[in-house]
Image (cartoon, rainbow, N blue to C red; front, side, top):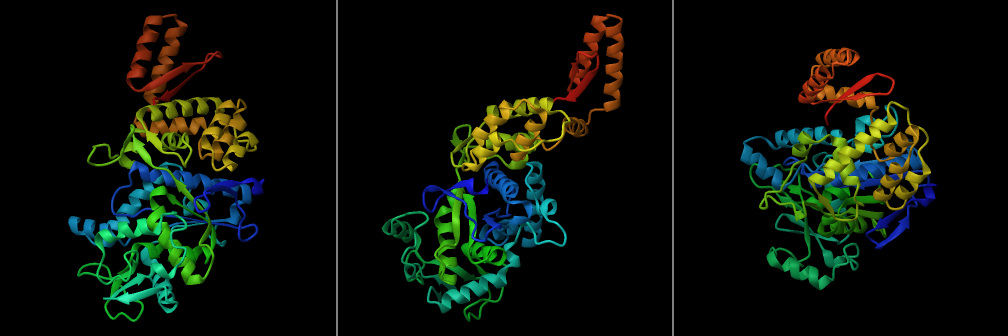
Length: 459
């Protein structure tokens, strides 16, 4: 079954079977957040998509055979500016923003290092921070300078793009087009307009570290070098899958490829490059100027994380997604039906009917269609579980909804008992009055054929 996993490779522009470099071990890297502000709903898409891939790889190859690194960028111009704006230290800003990010994505059902790593065993998931890998960055830069692929100019270190003949293979942008775009604002110390910064001097009050390449002044890394360094440290010189949003193909991922290949003399940095499509809000590109910029936390204030996850997975990851209120409402109704149908039954074996479309380049729309067709509760729970859904039993979900709502469960039970007595007396007016009172509390009651009554808090 493992040999049947096929993924669309941006590098080759074709679906390819995943063939791990090391037999029985899969290594994956994904570009994570820049922690200067709250994550927006567009940031949630790659997190959910690549979490799904991580889950699928663990299912196919075994949990102990998959290593996933998702980085955190905590040194950046935006971070410096935001910390200065708020009058706090950079570390205070990045620690606080990262803590909020973690709280948000846990609610999306994203697997975390503490949930998958086993003490005493190599970590299955790593979340490396850029500032913890400065030594690796400077080591890469020194190697690039020594190999003639980078040079020092005015206390900067720049990558020499013309030194790499096939630069641009990932994005497939013509060289003259890239040069024309780069000439808009060319620093005088650049040999070529396409050359990009590996290291730069720090301004006063900015974070700084000892510089590489014999530069006396302290400085800080450019953006692209951090991912090359962290991937090398945790996954090796080459690895199996590199993932990220489609907006990162150029220049970020193109420059990662250039740095890593030229440093290590390898034909590839990663064998398969996976990219998710853009997100729009109600048919328009999300932007603050249009007033439709929505943070993940704002969405989670109104919708359970599982609803957000399902709404994302209804669209294939490579296609643009239109984020709508209607989509959230439909996802919520779907989950309600599935929880009702699955009840508290334990999951059975994962159904092949759901697994097969996932093995075909994460075809989540087809997989969800197959979940809809499952009529066995154990199969339904297992099929949805492959997608990171139905993570609770119905009873657990109901209790969590009650706890979150602030509804007084004891008071509800008393009202239900009173309604039961009224129905036994055939006092239908009183029964309807109590049902109305329960509805006003946000409680939905359901009378079963065996005479019992269950209740849930409206989602």
